[in-house]
Image (cartoon, rainbow, N blue to C red; front, side, top):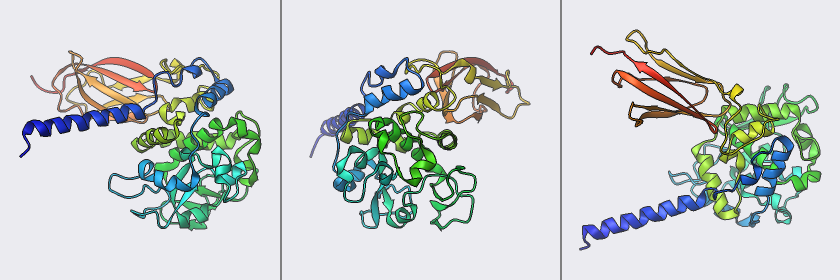
Length: 363
């Protein structure tokens, strides 16, 4: 019989292997250094130069990669196009989120250029939903859907773009940010292929050239989806998995605030990976202070386009409560003792700190 020491040793080795895998999967130190200090179009091009060099994989074996990039812990493919739980690839397609026809690739020619094989743009997709999606632009269906399966919709959008009157493809709310960040990745990674953008779907969302690429209405849509459906653990894990296979990353998953510096609120401001967001766009308000027995909740509000994280620390600096929130949070502090606490809020790369007094219990 093996000794307890042997079991502990095995556990330690497994733990070290897991740590080594996680470290290897993350962006290496200095990966985004060349983009620091850049703004707008120059920033987008700097990111292009960082992520464009990568390994081109084979399109026809991408379904085997999905077992790594798009496999749920429950044991089936992570399909953003349907709720069907499939343990085999039967009934699924290899789907280009940004349609391959938009960059001039016909069926059977996917391996001809790297845009046709990029795993950041390839996902396992329910075949029926994929057939309905065709090469329509993404958008929000406002009329009666031509197709819906309870997850995705295809149909008319009367308020989409003035120059486009066709159908749009609308993903589920929980994946709209995924699609937005994918589209922004593609037009950034392939600046050198910008002359290939084509088809009516492309014209509905994109100009020619390398910046800003997206039409104003398309930017508005992408920013809306990016802000309301923030980066998820699924996206982070997928980005890491693709990096190990393809050796480049989606920067808008690693640094969601880059979207704002290239197309959004911070256009005109220089990006710094270790710096702060422009102060005028990040305000922290926490109330009431002090917290008394009459107060039912402690509210924290931030004016920031990215998901924030708060930390409540005691007077010794030890974190006793933490969570993520989008724009405001109602924090239950009933379990905390009376005293003075530190509230730290991180949004993007900015940190703000304030103190609050808790006096809601009788001594």
